[in-house]
Figure 1 (cartoon, rainbow, N blue to C red):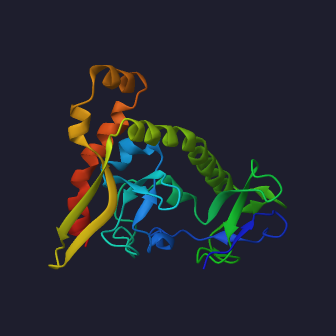
Figure 2: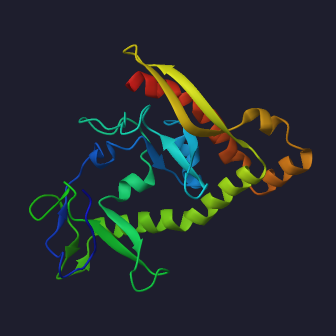
Length: 231
């Protein structure tokens, strides 16, 4: 079980992080959150879909990495089975989280229970008596970048929802092992609705530079075959 603690250059001065090319911490995740700015690269490896929060009704942009819950077909002992690795995966075992004292203030946290975290093997988080190592600085920069992209991602999803361009999609898939799987709870950019957009609305989406990510979502659905091949 994860155990995130606020990172402290005194308390955690001896910690190191081992490289895990398989990203095994995500082995039980069949979806991975994406930023709208990742779509141009992610579309080459993953089906890009939307999932709906049952409690809030909010849609989230994700890469589909498994055909069933608790399954990640890209996790492998030989390494992650795709060229592009989503930003959120690359930040682990670190994360940006809200401070208890001030919800608007983000702090760096580390999952102390992560298998990558130890005091003897890997790259140090702190050097020279408490300074950030290059590894730590790079991970913080990556997480900060992803966090800064969240509002744009939310606006992208909201524009799709407000223009009724997202539709539920149920799929029945037969794996290479002959197992039939019914995929439910997923939403996709509806190509038919895109084609029926009023010229004014289409032009507005173009002016907002949203057509490229929209088409990336649509084209990415061809990557379902990649999941079948990995299953």
